[in-house]
Image (cartoon, rainbow, N blue to C red; front, side, top):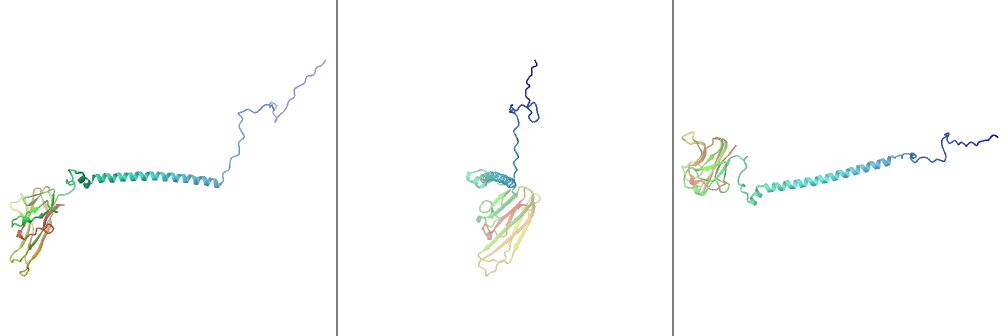
Amino acid sequence: MQQSYAYPQVFMVDGNPNCNPYVQAPVWTLPTLKKRRKWDCKTVASILILNLVLLALAWVALGTVYLIDLQKDIKEIKEDKREKSPHAEKIIGAQNVTEPPKNLKAAAHLTVGSYNNKGSNPLMWDDRLGHAFTRGVLYKDRGLFVNETGFFFVYSKIYFRAFRCEVNKNLEHVIFKRTNRYHKDLILMETKKTSYCSLNDKEWATNSYQAGIVFLSRGESLYVNVSYPKLVDSDESKTFFGLYKL
């Protein structure tokens, strides 16, 4: 007796005979890709403007910080200058206030005192009171001694005055140089005044001024002679003598 066998049925899915419709897809299967979002022009422009605004705010913040630091530096510099100024040194009692800077050149300005009117020559000067001073120059024996060789601008002004006029008196004003190179003092500048008053004048006054550039060697000195020292006015703004190195 011939037995018949039942053959299992075969199902075809998408043309793949090995595919079992009852078997689930593996978990590692890639998900279905979504369609990319399309950006319109307005969205792109808005994002660009937002980035520019954020960038501008960042620059403003950095600039503010820089200005604050700069103001602090300027304040510190001003405070340092104020502490180092001569006025501040005088306030705190610094000892080197009177010391002149090294780059200043030699100079001197002398004024005549009331004690000078004694009829003596050379004229006696004051090197400390009022506008008088000496820097790099020595006032000694009624003359100015230079400590360095070079060209100097020399000036002198004499103010003569009296309460009456006397005839036959010549007012002479002479600047001399004393040096070891010659046995006699040299005349550098000279003025002479005549007819400076009349017999009808009860009071008179006249000026004598001279100045020039001269070459002086170290150790040489200058002094001033006048014909009538008693007629010299002692006002420091009218009678003076000085020099400064060029």
